[in-house]
Length: 437
Image (cartoon, rainbow, N blue to C red; front, top):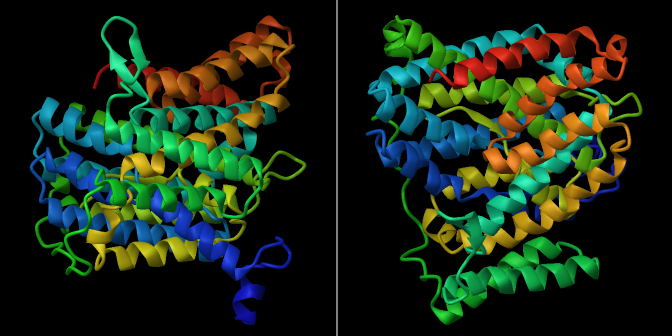
């Protein structure tokens, strides 16, 4: 135990094995839904749901454990929701591209991803983003995950007249979310340790007692085979032979690149990992863990993985080192055998955790120089863009596109570094690609 403490620098970070365990468990339960959502989304593309379940668990476990051991960050990795929807609905169903060919596109983008990481291109980009925009990214992610929680919990619903509206309180499961919110808010305000996790457990118990959550059908089940999807991305790489498919590969690359960059920055700001220079220590190792997970996932048969914003739930309850990530990875491996139990933690149970964390991350808004509009405008576009476009990368794109323009207007163009100008050009291309998919 002492060697584990030394390796992960628990004393230096003011943490303990118990605290890291609770943080890992909290993060895992906050993101465990991906084990069921990812097979549903990719299954719409004709892929085997059982194989996707196993691929999701293994890719998530591998990437998250790598993040913990190599970078010593309490950040988890799993297939991204936006990317799996793009894969299934836009590429396979919309463009009528076989899922095997689409998976080959993911594999090719993963190779490029690894090359960019090896040459530290991603690390340079992250460190070049101004401090105020990093704070905006963190706050924007907070609003984004709070919006996800409000929607999943049934408190916010779509409305054809007003786009969104308050959900119906006549829906019984919505009251689970409300109960969880009340309990979590009280515990957080009272600064009770592991308050978010306790809130989820109490909400799950209430759901079981009232019958709103169905009791699990069993405890143990064997992991489904990977055979239906394993290696399809490699064997069909030769099918990437048209401009349309190259655009698909480029889109996978761009969205994964900036979704991960944005999430890393936001989580690092929340946990206080950004140093006095505005840079994230060991970011290269974190990006390598992420890239290797994308590559493994494409081989196993799942859409691109990325750093998960739900990691903020574990950070909020005290996770400060990579030991949290190691625990999360172990839980993902165990989940392949105990998947029936995961059904107890429904979206209504995890929604309050996302909302509470969103509140905590929104505090980053206080550090932005709003009185300087050349900073305030791009920061605002990032913050408001993420929840309204339902995309981290789209929100970042809006802000990065506006930043050089507002700085020039304020006669501060010389302060815009070369990387930010390159990002400006990249996002012009990004907008073009996203509108031609």
